[in-house]
Image (cartoon, rainbow, N blue to C red):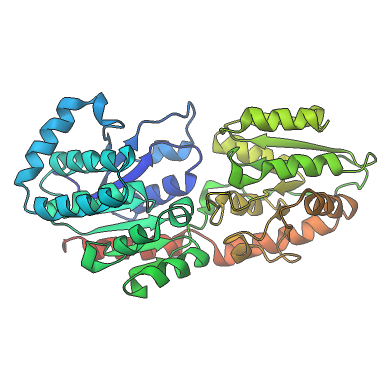
Length: 413
């Protein structure tokens, strides 16, 4: 029987079209010699995958998505883990958590942790979770049960919508917190470092971009000022992406400006956004492509004149970190119009690498017109963003750092 890889990596779901940054990292860690098994909290819902997903060689194991769906598996695990050396400490940690958050979600994470701790082989040495909310809860409980170290990579929603008490405990050695954590923006790192028992528990590790996966930027002849402005966006149709603002901005563009906009991505607000486009009279110039794989996304970027991402802070605090699609656009010399939300200014300095507008239809309409009326402006901004991407936001430095950190919590070879 093959030996258990020493590292278990937890993800919310696998594969997921919207999380190429995770797929990119996992493939790179594997290629860097990190041996791991992938544990997914959910089964896939996307009907497509990226070529990147096919490169992963690690075994993928699925935990019970809902405990009632696999009662015998959960029952056996919950009985078996009582014999593990860390059961009392883990049960106490779970009891403290459920006293403050008595939800089906919390109880599900405990059940999933029991299954992982029971089914993982004896060769397991450490755990690493993507996202600091639910996957890290499973990793933490399982790690306590097995008496092992755990670690995490935090992103955006998990940082900004988790309760402070939970973040503090996951960031403290006294409450079985992570051995280390990584997060992909300076904005997020500083917030988590302020909550941790020691700032050194949290590292800033930009995802960066694996430029080997992308074609060289196309030759982009100067656009005729009278030609239609071909705009595009990639992002889920959810509140924090701000596509309602973008649609309203399109409706404000003057009649003498020819334009078209293509959207790539799915999401809960799909019908709402389509209805908004109809109501504002711009639906006939919009193409809704739905979820696409990465080759299709890059092909669309190469054909466009402007990439637009109107990110905002949602009512529940959810927000983007540093969206990888901005770096992907920069890789193809596609000019960028976005917002100064969260970590976007860590990559885009407005007026230098792109344009950052406030979250209003008027501001976005003005930004679109700036690019449309001045054919030289977009290429100038895109060239600067492309240069910054290559100089400061490639994948390799982050993977080197993360692999070193992970080896530090594994037993010496």
